[in-house]
Image 1: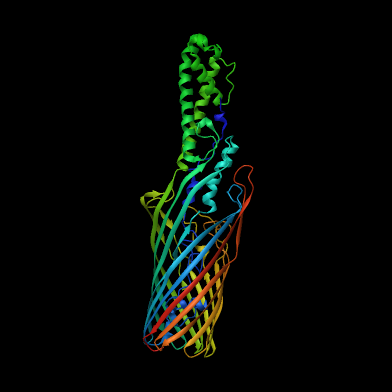
Image 2: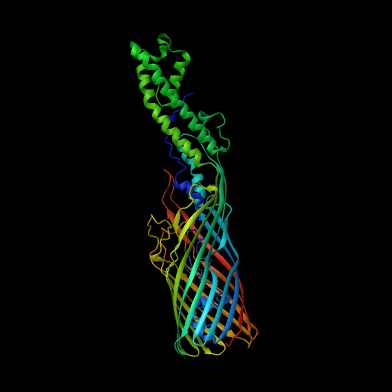
Length: 560
């Protein structure tokens, strides 16, 4: 039986970037992105008081060490300490109706967990000077698990059956074992110096050291398909087999054909030179070719897509000579496919540091009104990749440097007490995303941002008693990304967050803050053009939901 191998257009070079991209976590939303409040990569939920009020830009309490350093002079002289922790849970969902995914439309669920999300602040005021320090996860801060991968992971595998079927190799199923987890910590170590110019105006200057550690572990294993193509071996008759075994068998078959064609081109030359080139190939026994050799030549010619009947020896040699390079080329492609579908393991990390200069001012025209402004400069961070145990998956390269910058941020805030028991807070943040290269590659420039990210909201706190205060707040984010930014690994949509909770004065020196927050995300949609010939266009839908529980203790060792 002859098989038309040479005419198969092998376009399954699975060693290419799309396949290897299955393992990429770089700059993904669940790793380096903000975990809750804030911009694309900046966390702004940095105290339990924020969780229950949602607006702290004009804070004059201890958490102002992060939100409003200039406002700390309003605390009075002495030592002040705030210890906070938030437990954050986020669920990310991606739905795709790509036609070749088994079970389409298919939903992929990722779980992000940050059981420990600390915020620790120290303040010491003396006279007109205020010295403060803080520690918090300024970006990232959680770990993510996608137990079944994402559409971009699975689509590369799902494309194999229809591609093979289109080339005359009936294939209807695929399976693969996919698992990934990652963790990220953009830890911020901040110090500030504030100065009280007069009773109405204070200013502060500070800096934050940002230390970054991203870790990636995962695998893509046992990619299997069910091809019906015995030309590559008796085992390929519709049962599930490893894709790498199928492609390896194909590469071996085509390499054998190439070697046979090349050998017979040389072996037929003496016969042709002796003047028997015009003899029909079927009469090979009269010119020194055995029946076995004639049969082999005819089979190779048939595999090349030509009819061996009625060919002369010279014509047969010409076809063999033309077919040999084609067989060799196809064998090389199949060998690459075999490598591309082998098991992939990843154990890699990225590390880097950067400095954020910070300026702030607080204006208090009256005892019951604070107006604050803060500017954080862009944080330039070069991430260096480290691959452990030579497990980079083909996309993590040991020593490679990537861009991990954080954008500049301008914040405004107002705190107003119309009466002693009532606090009204409002905030506005602008994150200058247009000045950041979010694709992460210093050699690539992709326009992913149309406008800068905005965050704004307001909150209320009311004192029920001298010790007990209740609060609630709302905040909204408006993203500025375009469709170049949106994909199943990195997406950003507008949000609305609600926080509530209470504060309780345990003693004149100790305050307890407890809060709960939930964030609602708008659903994002991206439409894609067909990938394979004859396939349909498709969409992906992106969504998240986030919950947070926070607790904090504030200690006032000085006059408040």
